[in-house]
Length: 212
Image (tube, rainbow, N blue to C red; front, side, top):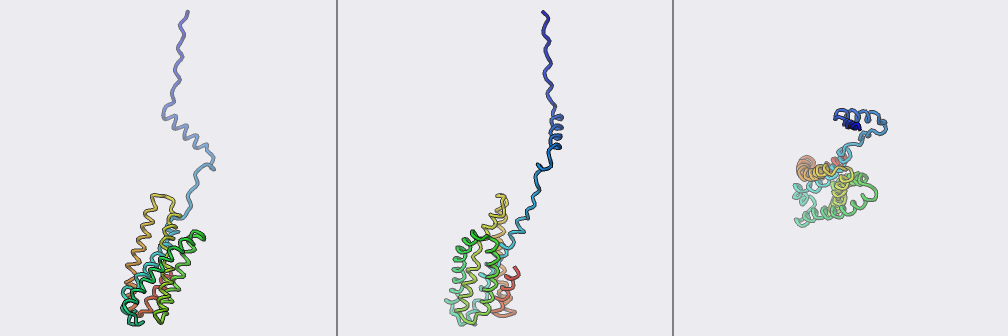
């Protein structure tokens, strides 16, 4: 019997040939299957009103630090009254945190941020026009309620920034806006008082809030 011939083993495709075939398949793919470009705006373009709102809120808290003695002279306030004036703002901010956080879940973050800036402008004007301690207490309490937007700004960051690795950066910028408010607030209060008096300090903050 004749010996059977061994058939040659099938030739394995080389690496270069496999890459060429992959390129051909990619070229044959329809254009509709190509990934769409990401046309979403950058997070900073969406979040800057929230940062400005946080800045204005905490600038308003620090504004009265250098002018407290002069508030006492103008309104006949005692040291206890001045301490209560700071406490009224903080209490209003606590209430505002709870109210605005819930409202932002129902009607959206950005409308609350914009409404807060508008209300802050009105409350600053009311502080500047106050002629007595009662009116000043009410205006500062309203200002505190309008300033309860820190949770709203943080929630807005979580909504806008989908990349978990980027969120700490934008949350850190929110904290930086808070710190800048405490830095700028006393400087604005002192400079405005020197140029325009006690009421002028509040009017300058109203202008800054309106511009924001």
